Length: 374
Image 1: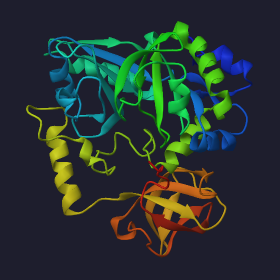
Image 2: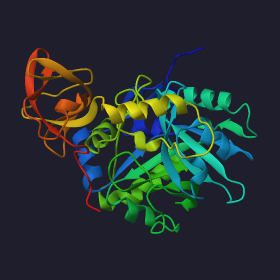
Image 3: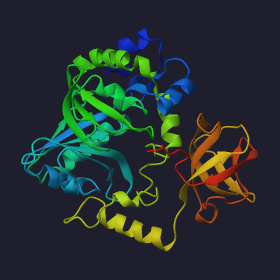
């Protein structure tokens, strides 16, 4: 079995554009094309084009598809309206987070089918868990990873760019909704979702159409300042928007309540679901004595904190950085960190990050660092 990274349908195109490629979750992906700062600013102010074909699509169909997902995931999947999407999580029996997911409800109202989109590094784990959890349900779980390429257009100019190449009703497409349509002649599921903090769209298409669509979007967006963007700026964009990244803010060692995302757990849904008992306890614990809280940190100086660095106050370790990077929008290094509740309030004095033995001063702020103007 070769360990060579998998390549997306756009691999040759990325290389022709001079992309710096990197191995990400077993895929060869573009890290950046030129300057990651320019790519970041393009998405904040104009538009960026991303290849996200490494994400894991899993289709769930059958009479009990919704019942299976209600049991297997922590969200209330049965209540998702036709053509809508929901952010949710899949947990272990002990409440630990296996992955965070977006679930799209597709198909006709009377025969719904669901597309579960998992993170690249967890797609196999999620697939295996869904198959295992489907044993008592009249539902089919299908690995659709090879049947989709995923292209995202993100940024304030993205609606205008997309409108120029589709007659789909984008104005009627709400945030976290998806509709089938044709984009530049290519059949696509058009979803108004993203991971940048900006308005934007994610286009699920057959891999054989990916290059044609990419080129059409590049052309359509040229006058609006759209440029191709890599995973590096995707990370700084999601960091500024305070969005969690699996393996950093979310892990199997944490429940959704530890991550400050207890709202995704829907105890009110009928029937049992995997992790219900453990999550009920976790919810009670979080209410009684809040564990560490997820906060934002903004540097007073120029040194960049990285995942795993200690957050310190009064000579004691009071937390840990989960993600850190220079913020192109703020012009300073920023970090997301889990910090003891006593030091987690915005404006808390005397908090720093231990960067190779030096305690650098940081300001505690509420997340997100950046919120787009609607």
